[in-house]
Image 1 (cartoon, helix red, strand yellow):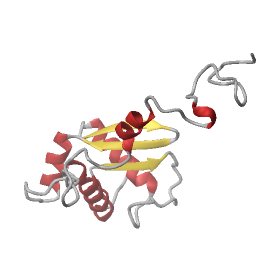
Image 2 (cartoon, rainbow, N blue to C red):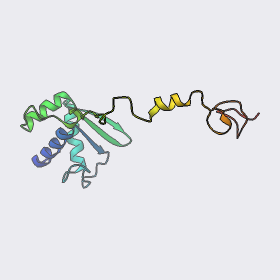
Image 3 (cartoon, rainbow, N blue to C red):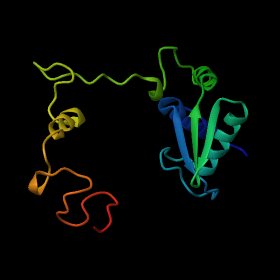
Image 4 (cartoon, rainbow, N blue to C red):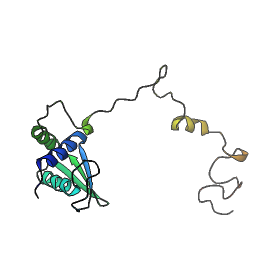
Length: 150
């Protein structure tokens, strides 16, 4: 398939920037790709097929969608093809900023969460009558998980 240099640069630039690319399995030539402006979906699929055969991209197919993941060799190839410096990396390789604790708060001291709820629930009854979950009690309907009728 003939692919213009403009389309090839647009697809390769998008793939390098994001690190991943998705495309629906729809081979109609007039269908435009949803993320890359001005490029047909068929062109994206064929370029990714070419990169997959050279092991620059790993492909997964699920629910009529193609998922393409850039490999380390693919990063080096696209960096050379697009003439990018070595400091530039795809978004998938960038580290997310760590979540910072609020002022005056130590890690693990937040209210809520599972640990605090679990500790509060021990020994204290829940619901009406002070009885916990599970069998017994006979109040309400059933009295627990899979308890059936008494």
